[in-house]
Image (cartoon, rainbow, N blue to C red; front, side, top):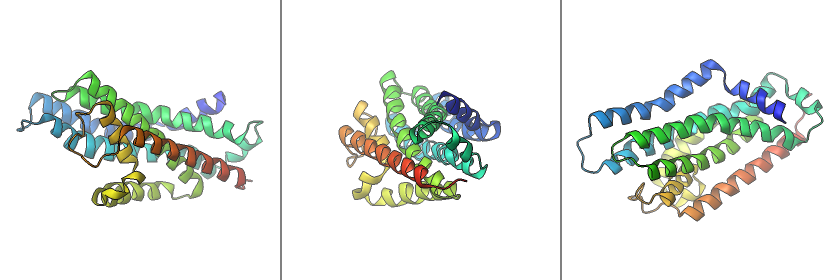
Length: 240
């Protein structure tokens, strides 16, 4: 398992892809630096941070883009490169293949996404340790949930990246944004609710946000469900 984890990290850290993801993650950080030097013309800097930097940028863009790119590539590249057969020949269970792949993905995605959120909240005016810790925990929940979905998607279709982007920008950004009743099916809102649960100042204006316990329970169900679906798919697929 350790060997698969190390090899997976090497795949995740391809320079060109990593540089693109780091650039995307650096955008809200750069804007928070600008906001610190030139404070925005508003008395409510918390709303500026949540409604302009954290919500639309870190949670709705950086988090899903980074996880969809890395998650769909985790097992998808093994199929495209026709190297999955070699993994199947190793004396390890399907869990022994999926777990290190999953851990490698959340390692890289977690560092990029959580780093972006923590630095954004720490640099922007009125940031605090509590705010940054809450952002880190909430984004970690988002990384776990999104990664579980996109890892499964990478096994299901060769167009997983495109499907994932449609899910992110059509379902999460558009449909869920207008139909608040379906927030139980939104990773974005699990993330926001977790952040709010650890720091009730953040996203306080969003009265329809799920509670902390509801968000964690829903995210846990998503991770467990898609982990099971990934194992089931990997067990039944023919890679010869």
